[in-house]
Image (tube, rainbow, N blue to C red; front, side, top):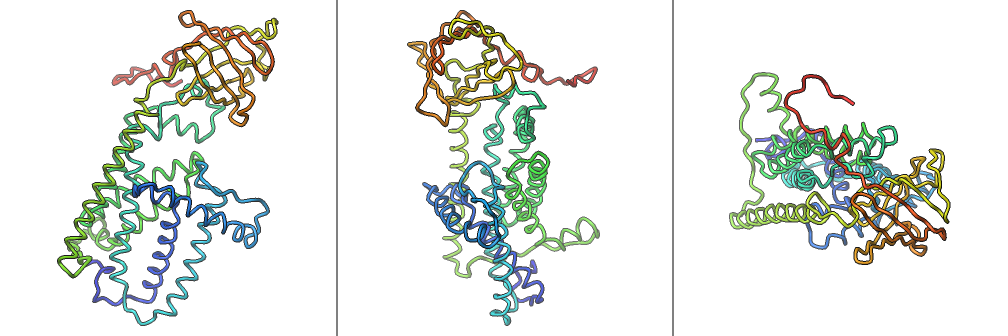
Length: 432
């Protein structure tokens, strides 16, 4: 039997202290994950996120500003980054509380010989948390929701103008097959973690997959470094449980015995109820993950319809208040490209490379577009448009000026990144 789960085995003082610390730290981290409800597909899980962020908003000024001495307001709330000051303050707090809790727990619980029963349930909790996180991320990779094919504005952006994270997103999003590969790795790791018999293999697979994810996050400055690092630590923790057996098998060429898993309940009736609940939970989470991913694929993913005017429009001629404006590379106000995106937005790239983002609505009957800056919902601009094949003319008023834009619609397939397909045979490297 595994030494952590053997109720007859006496633990050393050091082993008990290490377990107490790991238990407290992972428990604090998991319970304070604002997306815990989403990973477990709890109905209307927003309440859990609101609860966690509410506690953080109360706690961060105390810990971050008054105790740690940060001299700026610590923003709390979902903004796409998991590496905010608030996240680092939270992790530091979890560590500090775990150290203090371990010391207090050691003083109050000196006589206990082991924590085999607690280990049984704690290992299961970590397994299921890690499994459901992997499954959640795996499905959205499998159908290219997390990493979509490079968008229209990305195709206009040079490598030098890309951020490291943008470069990583383009790299991942370009290849549907690599999305399949990474997504299946996460899904298989999650599925194998759901059974105690296959959990060691699942932990090994999860460790390999998540270590690669973590290195991408660190190497390309993706702001999920803390989260991915903790998932790696959880996978490593699950692997260390079987460390002696793995060492015997892989390094010492010694026989290793099978693990005998103790039951979660001694009462046979409770075992059946628990088994039924486990089957229901796994089936429910898998169904909801797949359903959510397929729904997202149709609404904003690869199978979503393109909106009206979707595409890249290169400005060929600009007339403002009756005067033709020359296309100067130094003119930060000259609109060089209009990009109508999938998600009801318009991006405008100027001759100097600056990009502005606008909310957009298109009336195809009146052939009219209305747009405004995302931070300015009051001042709206209107343009009428007419088209002749790939030539589009936009006319109207922008910021009080009469504007006439003659544009040519560019086909995304004209970009090398799009039209350069897969080749089994390459007589020479095609590296541009």
